[in-house]
Structure formats: C-alpha cells, structure tokens
View (cartoon, helix red, strand yellow):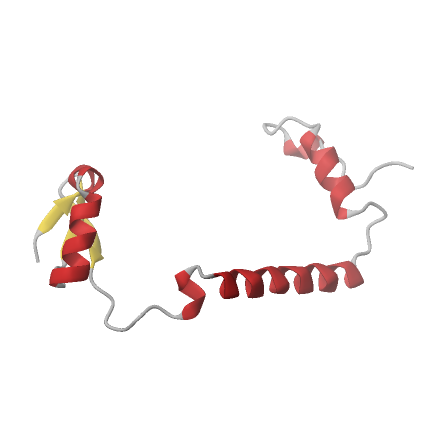
Length: 105
C-alpha cells in the first residue's frame, strides 16, 4: 500500500479517488511523514443513508422535525429556543459566561 502525503492527496484527489474506485488501490495517508489514515475502496455499495439521495435527505429532515417536537414538549425555560439563539448572537463569542440563560420579562 503506497504512502501519500496530505499535500499530494489534495493536489491529486480526483486521480487518487479514481484509482481507489477503478483499480481498487489502497493508500496510507501521511501527515509530516507519519501515517494518519487509510484510503481503501468500499467492499460493498454504500448504504442509502450515505449516498446523499433525496430520499435520505427527506428522511433526515423528518427526523430533525421529530426531534424538535420532542424537545419542545419537554422545554421548561421561559424563553423559546429562537429567543435564546437571538440573545446569544448579541453577546461576544469570547465571553459566553456573560450571557444570561433566560430573557428578563
């Protein structure tokens, strides 16, 4: 299995992925000369959840909606999630301790 540095991988990504797909090539990816990963072909086709087709995107969105509703049923703060996010945006990112958890009403 040949070694390939991250810079070379970046420069030749399309060619290398094509070799993995077509020639079933395998590569050891290195960073500063040390192995950090392996690029190998999949033995079986990717499951539907990883293919990025519309069906899996729709089911992922449905799952997010379901989780949002579940969180909403158990929400106990006087502020809504949207209000908390809006408040968070008005405070500097460097000092999260200064942000209140709820808005005074």
